[in-house]
Length: 172
Image (tube, rainbow, N blue to C red):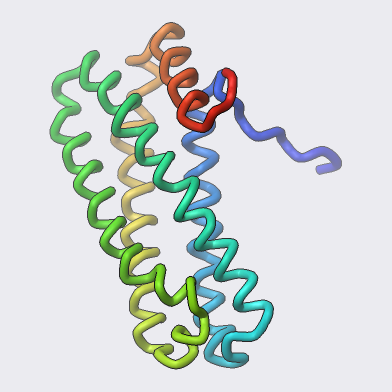
């Protein structure tokens, strides 16, 4: 492909959230490769760069993504289909589980030499974190995102997109 597909904008909040899922999957792939790399090369410059890039994403973008869902998308879906409430509660609980897994993983990324010194612990933290995120994304896309286009009208999607933009200090 000569020109990559442009990233979705706040005018397409569902597309933007799905694109975020793609970035999270990519970061999980990188995390798994990083465990191998650190085991073979220690906390070299390449490991430190990758760790900082991943850490930055999960400290800045991922919390905003969860807030987009919990503050805007999930309430809009609940408003239109009360039967989805149990699904949304489960997904919100998973957000809390992922936050706890992040708390265990983040120190290794903040100081990659600790990952090299405790490769087994680093590997367990990565495995747990990535399993939680991948499972969550799969469930969220299957049980939430498949229903959203049929439940949310243009006005609701515009409201969600504007809230997401405002959360990031951007215009929608």
